[in-house]
Length: 172
Image (cartoon, rainbow, N blue to C red; front, side, top):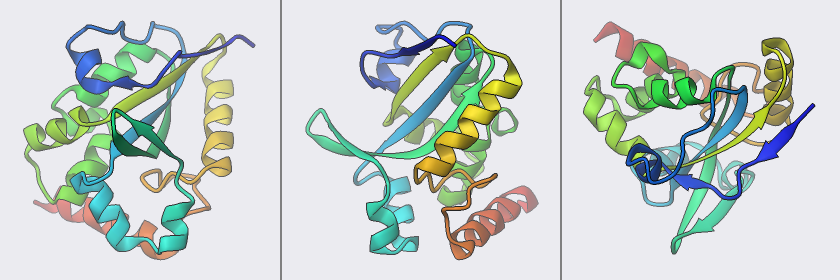
């Protein structure tokens, strides 16, 4: 199986501004990095214990610390990234989670939050099932608090909190 790692973590602003080439149409695994001080990181910090928060992978990028809060897969890397950035919550679980945490249905607010992030991806030559299996391995081996499905590392309290926030969003 071919595994290409991107040479660095790319800012979403650069990807949106097309100064960096978007992922190819190949299958990808990807990670979203959120900036220390962002609304999402503040909310996550408020709800996780310090021990849980320390389990989140962090990295210094452009004089700020960023945290890997979400991990995903897409059979078409370019389409997956564009769906996350498209102002339609139905196309992205990540968008729905961000909206729920911000307690908003305002798509522009969700987009603004995501534009502060960094995005990292790996391209693979594999089928959907293999990609999903690899995603599950990554989620189980890391600590990604915005991933709910098949994530046995997050506490039931945090999982219930996120699920309730999503339900509240749907009922608005």
